[in-house]
Structures are given as C-alpha cells and as structure tokens.
Amino acid sequence: MASKAFVDTNVLLRAITPVMELHAQAEKLIQEQWDNDVEIWLSRQIIREYMVQVTRPQAFMRPLSASQVKDQVQTIESLFRVAEDSRAVTAQLVELAALPDRWQTSA
Image (cartoon, rainbow, N blue to C red; front, side, top):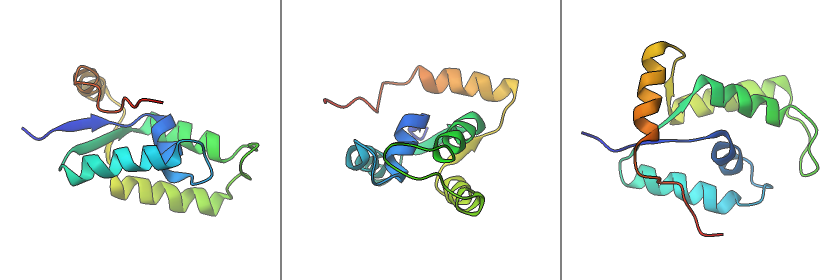
C-alpha cells in the first residue's frame, strides 16, 4: 500500500505563496513527500478555503484575480490527489487523519 498524506489549507497556502511566513518549510515538506513517492491528498474544501484566502486583501499580498485563481486551482488539481465531497471521502479522510503526522515541524 502506498503511503498517503493529507495537506491542509495552511500548508497549501504557504507552499504556493512565496511571500508567506514558513513558505520554504511548507514547500520542502511537500517536495519531500513527492520525493518519497507519498500520495498527497487534499479535499475540495481545502481548495475552497485556499480560494477564500488568496482572493481577500492580506497584509503580505494583494488579492489574486479570478484568472489567477483559476490557473492556480488547475495547477493544484494537477499536482495533488483531490478527494471529492461525499460520505466515502469523509471515511477516507478519517483514515488519512489516523496516519502518523507527516507535517510536524519544529519552529
């Protein structure tokens, strides 16, 4: 069975947004998982949360345009496994949540 990991909104946002604090660490965590053939998952809810964050004014960045958001979502969908919203997905997310914590870092 292939190893799996689940990315939350904070890790996704930091990995994709170079101006965010902890960008390098988040990007490195994801890259290490890919390098180790870990299947990385996120949910449609994570994508929605990401879209909310990048389309509102932030102290560290300007909101992305609709076109930029569309391009970013397409990129996200091409890089990660995306769990569709359903009861079966909830069951899979519960399983993924029970895996050892792959995303802990020392600050």
